[in-house]
Amino acid sequence: MSISENLNKIKSTLPAGVRLVAVSKTKPESDIMEAYNAGHRIFGENHAQEMKQKHADLPADIEWHFIGHLQTNKIKYIVDYVNLIHSIDSANLLQAVNKEAAKHGVVVDCLLQFFIATEETKFGMNLDEARQLLESDEFKAMQNVRICGVMGIGSLTDDKDQTNREFAHLKQIFDTLKTDYFAANAEFKEISMGMSGDYQLAIAHGSTMVRVGSSIFGQRYYANK
Image (cartoon, rainbow, N blue to C red):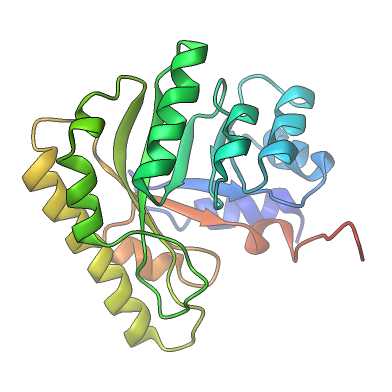
């Protein structure tokens, strides 16, 4: 099927209140435009400089989400236009985003990324680290970031029981943070979890935002191949 057909098929499976981030990392701009022309507007990238170029070249009403590990020296490439950073995995990174956002006079929406998988290569904080961040004087002084929810990446596994446990764990983290720190904050509402192979399980556990790439665009393109 075409990109537009894949996109519409996936959208037809999403309940109200769940948004689709079309993961366009490594994909050519022509693929993004096919999805755009089918009516889609939310795209996810994981390389800051690649996203900057696509942002410059493509329609201005695209909503750009940064979903990969973000290095502090790359924040400057995305901070003035990014709609949501999914991958705040440390206090230092959040501080760096806040500092760069202040230079541009913007407030950047962010999700706290939690480590929920078994693979050691995955990034993310744990609940204790999140508590330490949210209770710190440094966080309370930040004026240019807004925490809108949580993000997690499940293990790459065919074991649905394991995936269910991991997604349930992230939902529990979200509920705890909502109760303890964000009860009065309506903007703290997002749970970004679920990808091409497991997004329906993620939705069953409360995901509000699924990140789907290969099921829309096909397998990844790599420039060095």
